[in-house]
Picture (cartoon, one colour):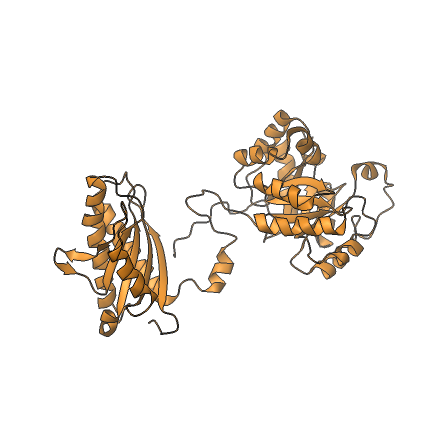
Length: 406
């Protein structure tokens, strides 16, 4: 169960519905180790509102292994105390005893261990039956998970980018499943922008770009306004930073940007500081190659690489470029970018992307298709966006992934 090198194991479980929902965090370990020391210290030094109590199945009958229950929410009055001393205490104690009977904890070693259980009881919870049943189930599940060392690291890595935390209500999308459609909002008029954002289809495959003109007029805080309309959608702050890389990346992070963009024309040190600061604030960094003669050479100079490279044809060039004059992929050599940055880099293509060019861009290796006026200036914004999503093969995306196995 627990070997001497581990000392103690940790388990967690969330069970039930509000307001009686049970959230259990627990530690199980040897009396002779850190768990035992914490157990004794908690009893000897109680804190007001969070006084720990021994888990008893009934008065004068403590469970085994000895279990200490610590309230997460401050006990403010007698009603709060009764929930802890009554249904919660009884449920947790019974769950520990049943775990021994069922072999989750070895009966022959029960005297060697102690359990510390941190329990959440909502102040509005009133139904003792539900409080009891939810805390019983959560404690048993947390104990099983602790003993099984759940989750293993592979499970954490698999789930970290696709799970929804119940207390947030939306999933943070880290762009791990391309292709994506990036809708560029370069319109410096919030009323029009708001209408476009509301009209876009609900899809995990959509990125909303707060374009440079929009940010220049309203400030980077416009990202927050977009997130208020679409909390589940990735929002990109197109700063095109040329100086003070760490400062502007921090500003974007503070404004809740999921992706922040800098210019490939900036000094190498500025670009590197921008990328490093993005890592600190939890945002993805994007290099915009607008007017960069050779993006690959710039990327080779960087000690740290951006998460996204946007191969960008400027609007003026896009409008004047001869139709019969095309580069290898129209936007640049995507294969060379991947060779320099590694396979994890995402490559976006921007400038002149129409519905009839989507397949060509994807075939060339693009992960993100950046579209502006073809969607934002369309009479039917919803229909135009859906047309791109259909060509990309990502129109039907599971928005609500419900986990029932754990």
